[in-house]
Image 1 (cartoon, rainbow, N blue to C red):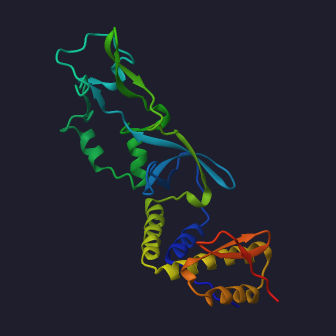
Image 2: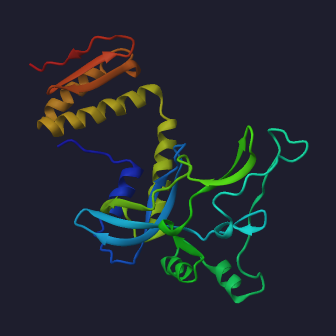
Image 3: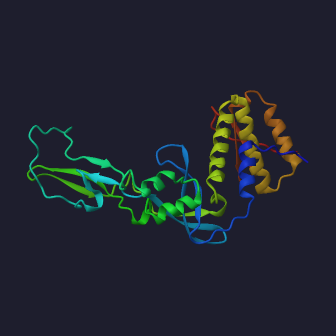
Length: 272
């Protein structure tokens, strides 16, 4: 029997996901999210609405709206302002309005002390934040963004508009093995993935190529029920070749194929 060695990342994920989880409506759930414009990851959280055999439905939450436009709370500011004359000395770099983020509670109040004491990595604190409206459901949060609109003849005005580049859908459906009851569990997946990326970055080109070959061999064996002996024979053949670091492999039509990176033609490995 061939021994399979798992990476630290695989061990961590299997350990975490091996626990059978059960959520109730209203429970806090954490998951690993990805930034829209980068490979970086972070822990997101929300409130469970429904659970199925293989999925968890979640309402996302957001910090309460503490935006102000020209000193006016965002929710009280009109969606569209009247047209007005451009200010004297206007250029394309002129700031026509100001957006600020302010605390909505007095710094000396008990509410402020409570808000500062809450930690969003603790489920009970997330629920408290929702009860006191420090957090709100994303579906109730105004995701519009203020823009200045300049007209050739009418002057300028402020308009609130949705921005597709920043809009976040307020509901999400998670696979159950990607939904965690604690922040620490989700954070552990991120830490393990970053450790795995670090490990990969330190491999030589040949070591990296061998891992890719092994990955494809495992797929080939699983899909087409290949024996450990067949897999080992193909592996020995490939690793016995020159310039292993330049070898590419693939599974195609039940066959295991290879080529050098610089070549176009794929070659099928035939076992006697």
